[in-house]
Image 1: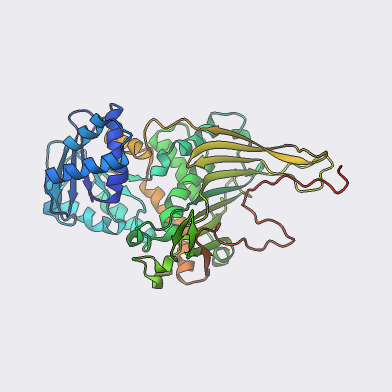
Image 2: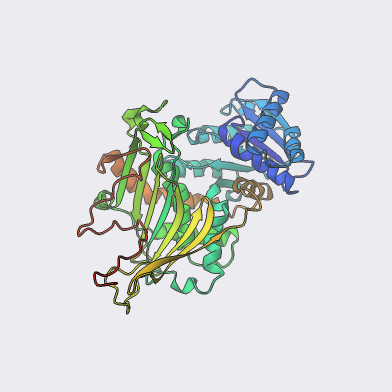
Length: 477
């Protein structure tokens, strides 16, 4: 286990909200010993004492539920180095010490190439590891270039392209539910599953993150990484083990099986939009174009939706719909697996059969199975929902990721070829959106997002996965 962690960009929001509380959680759990050292490197003109005060304040704010002695231990194990992260000399000072180091790039992804190039000159102790946050590059060519730079610096096994979604309990439970229950795996295919909605819709707007978000947008921020990773776990073949090679091989298989969208497909099967002014949970939200730090000329989207198909024996004929939006009226964060309707109903019911839906709630974490039973009126059907709340996670998602980094287990990180395949899937969408082949629609903040596309015949839009008790027939008492 490596006992030295260096965070580049150590005074940023990622460190304050997630990395520091995760380290305190590891300490409270007994996973970090007294030999552990944390080095924070950033451009602020601070010394180590000033940084410890900042760490203590952030831990009190974002990790106040953790034991005080664990928080104090993390703060006391900290030193600070003022550094220009593009300077080889400054980087050499940050990583100075005995033994290998885990180097966490808590930086804007645009800085990754120049920082990695500087690390080539600074040098890394043998056995060191590098951690990078998503998105990994800005396009396929960027990802390929980063992979080449990293390959010259450290072995692939030492590169951790982390995605904290993979460490969330419910995300892990997608595999657990599939592979540990005989009742599910035999019907986990296109014969029985019509479509899968992978959704991360949130009430949060920009919340001061325009500097990052306005250069990325919903497609790159959520769909290209988080939601494609969820697609992999839903659609992958059962791995021989959950070891890093078997698990990541099967995820790459899924991405390779995605049928690339043509221009016509992109027009028909993708949507993009951004929010107008509105009210979200009692708060006035300005239009995205009027948010501080936003350049309206970029026409950046805050809502993205993509429909994909897999060219594989198991999934041919099933639609996978990935979507994410900001400043919406309600949070909806789930994987919803919609099974095909039964072939015949003997109840005299005249409406459409209600589908069974298995929902993996991501935040809050839950598992719900929507079934159908007899309604209050004769010859009618009504929804039945079986819900299980998940036990609190043993560690927060970032705690699990950091523990894997320090222990050298890359199972939950993204392999280099996997990162490239994810960009390959979305390259046709990015190209078409760049040329405005898909209109940038608008929706009021606080609404449910883009209005449904007309389906004809008054039918509800596919993919909403909503239930309503069937109305009784006209001759019902």
